[in-house]
Length: 293
Image (cartoon, rainbow, N blue to C red):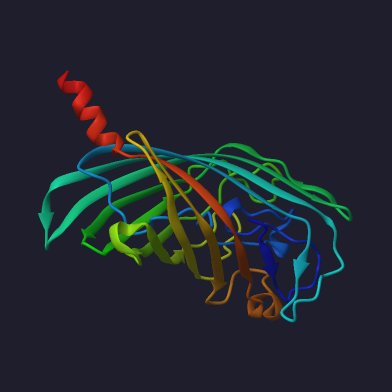
């Protein structure tokens, strides 16, 4: 997907959107803080809870853009290349029992990131790489029904990635984030051969270490419409369209943040195609079967 960032601030430079999870500008007075959720990560099968036991998943996320838009859709007069690659490793444990009719689960996501943010005006702004901020979700309740799957979650992002105020090799945000989220997957055709999924998250940020800047809170929305085109005894193939939205909901405040900068709000929009190949039997079930052999 090709994300488009819409913002009204002066084009000092385009700092990256949510996937970067870091402060990218070179001085605290121009600090640019974005949300920390890697957009689009939960767009597909958002409400599905894995079977009981342990499940491992890996996502390789690539974000790129070369322009910024203002609120009227016009292209801002800045050029450069913005890319972020994130390797997300998630381990999930799901209980066999039920609470209020839902299965309880918890997960931990350990990410590795590589940032390459370059301005034709100011040169390279960020070239950090390494272990990024880790994400933990200790509370997940999932309801699996005939036509719909729903999850509600609380999680937090810990600033485990390298961060120093003013540095150009950050891979961490420098602040904690608490999240409330929910995912839903609805079967539109019998046997869920055509499904619509949506995922919503509210991000509540704390102040950034070393700068005192409190980023604005953020709302994220992922969505997808996926159809099952092939299923065998070992694999299932889904194709469809997917997208995401993000909106800053409160003002950014802190030392040396001007009224104009505080009033500025960012928005991100993207739409694209998706292809997903899944094992027909969940990994947790296959691991249990192998363990019994």
